Length: 289
Image (tube, rainbow, N blue to C red; front, side, top):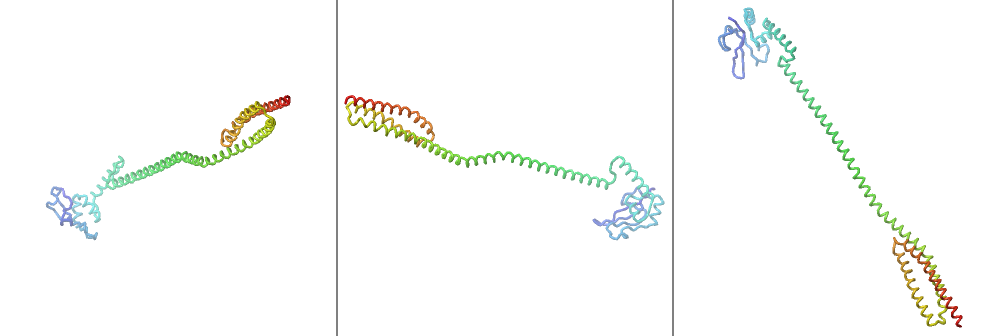
């Protein structure tokens, strides 16, 4: 008959209490016992009262070859009772642990929990690093976008500034143009004054010569003088018109001055012809007298 040292559960719900018994290995958990060896109360706070054993009887059954269960073996070790089964189990466990470590596998629950925690911490660190890298990349992208926007906005700003500068410059340029036109008109008027004065002098010189034969006019001479006056009038009218146009027009001043210069030799030729005709008439009158 094989004897085992194991526990039977006693007590009520949420208040367990265990007895340590010597039992036949073939009987069930709550079956017939051979001998009571003590009890174990896990809820008791006093460690001296948690485990109560019959030390002599426990050692007797161990000598007889009784095999304790795992929990009973731990309780006996806590109580200071050493037995060969605990030593054999510890050696077997050490060998299994060494082989497991040699294969690279975990043996105990604590090792598995430690490995899981290490893996979790490594994952968290990797995630944190990835998040930092993503943030750094996002910041770099934003900086690049801002730089690109600034480079795109610069031409627009330059255009705006140039447009504003042109708007400011336009009135100044218009003023300069008006001033330049006024100066040109003044210069043209100054240049035209001596020419007009010379023409007026020529007219004054020509008038007394024409008036001299009027003292004793003949019917034919009167007609000729009237024709000459009528021919002279339209020549004088464009003079006044050209001077007025020169004063009013700002752009065609140079062309008008050139036209006036071209008209001067024709007028001079007409005046010379008039002088010659007047001198010829005087000679005819003197001959007739």
